[in-house]
Length: 340
Image 1 (cartoon, rainbow, N blue to C red):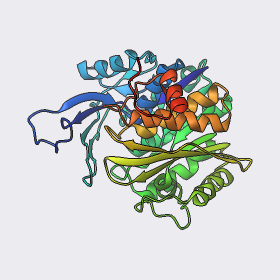
Image 2: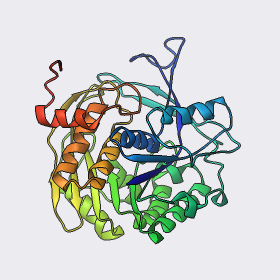
Image 3: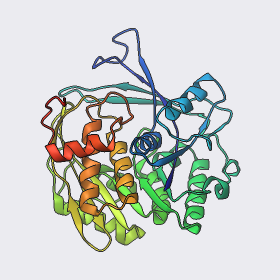
Image 4: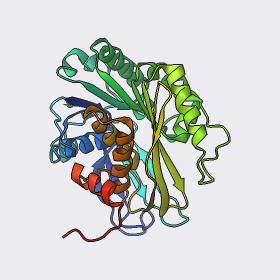
């Protein structure tokens, strides 16, 4: 089964270790992006993974695609266009100091793309699953049209559509996100979210839940998932459940809800975090892998949460784990003993 992921690939410039931005005279450069992170996870799990993006025709644009090819992601559908490479600056948090992200992606090549640049009939050739996120339409009004055309064509072709709501307050307002995404989510089969996304993007809030408290209200998340299915016709909703004790230590679990009304929960992990960014994307990639390989909902949520738990221990946005790595965590419980 072939999965096409669509979105912007970025150059990530991070302060070394846990230093503050420009505390030292160097930045660590890697490539990343919500949808690209998913494509890499899928390739690592052995899935035919394609990535569609638009980048500048220069050394940086070519290097970004080469970074994906290293993992076995097919970038043959990506194309070049005027504009620039999108950037983000990262300062990783520690203890009570939160991580910080600064975006610099105005006038990027993909933000300047036109709806006529995309021939979705050809782009969807041989594709069984299409993945995009709420970051895409936040980039430009053109991208709103592009995403809608893509979703309509995917529906016409019987392609399964997944979307991670991925609200980014530094890209657009909650009011605009709700206006745009309320239209686009109607095409989505599998919706991935967290408690903040559902509220900010779709206006659906878990009752009696406070994301800042670090405490979870399971019945509230079932309510949110049920409302998403009822209002937008999604078949499944997968929600990450994060307990933020501080920037270095989080509780981590997840839930998958089927439109028939059944919710399944994963095991719970206590994580000491090396790099949080990309954790949600690794959950999404593992969830897509689980569903296309026929796992039942309980096994799917266990696999997705375990895969994303491991990602939090890995530097960079990309999750570099294999299926066997994830299965070992599920089986052994993550005691950290040396594998010999």
